[in-house]
Length: 99
Image 1 (tube, one colour):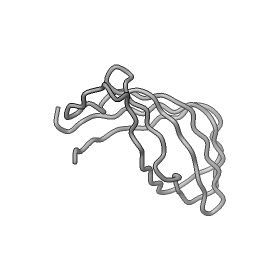
Image 2 (cartoon, rainbow, N blue to C red):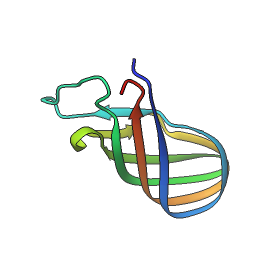
Image 3 (tube, helix red, strand yellow):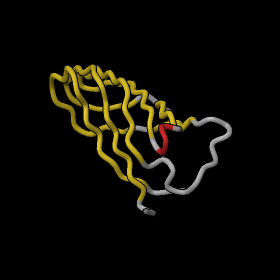
Image 4 (cartoon, helix red, strand yellow):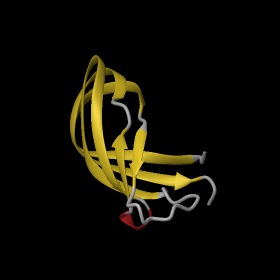
């Protein structure tokens, strides 16, 4: 396992407030891409959508990382609490603690 940290910025329509959220991602890359520690670090961009009324869900699809060689897809639906509706573009800055 590797440790990473990052920040998510969203641009577009975002009305309301939410508290905690959890995101789990499936990482996809071409078969010929040789993985090295810290390779997931980089900037990702893609589309996102969320709807929350007490408990809600969201979906994201992001492309980026080293040489734009990785695609991040939700492994499970993002869950959160609050009252919110959002649709737009997400930017995800992911950094490795190893570097």
